[in-house]
Length: 125
Image 1 (cartoon, one colour):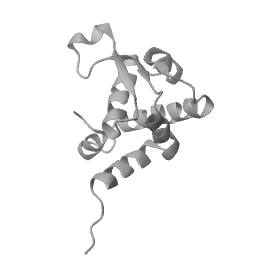
Image 2: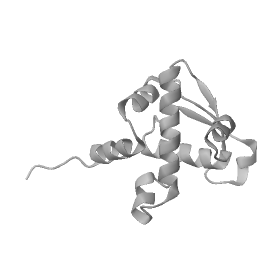
Image 3: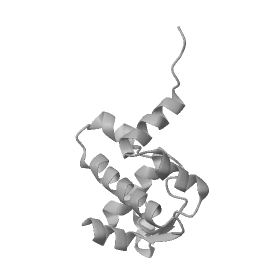
Image 4: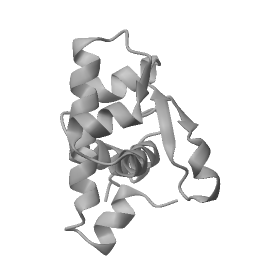
C-alpha cells in the first residue's frame, strides 16, 4: 500500500499531498459543522472541490493509510473491479475515532507527523 510518507520520500512536490490536505480540511470542516454526518458521497465531494471521483478515492486511501480511522469505512464502486486501489463510491465517518482524528489535527501534515512520531518515538541517549 502506498502511504503519504512514502510518496513524500519519493517526490516531496507531489500534488497528491496537497490534494490530500484539501480533502482533509474539507472533511474537518464538514464534521465540525455537522458531527451527525454518517456517509459521504465521493462524487459530491469531488464536485464541491473540483476534483475527479478517482482523485477523491485515491486521497481517501492515502488518508486511511496515514491513520486507520481517518475514514471509518468505504464502499467500492461497481466500476472498480479491475482498479487498484479500488474506486470508492461513498465512505462513512460515523465513528468516534474518526471525529477525534479530524478534531486533533489542523492539517494533513500534522497528522503525518503525529503518525510518524507514534511509530518512531524519540529514544533517550
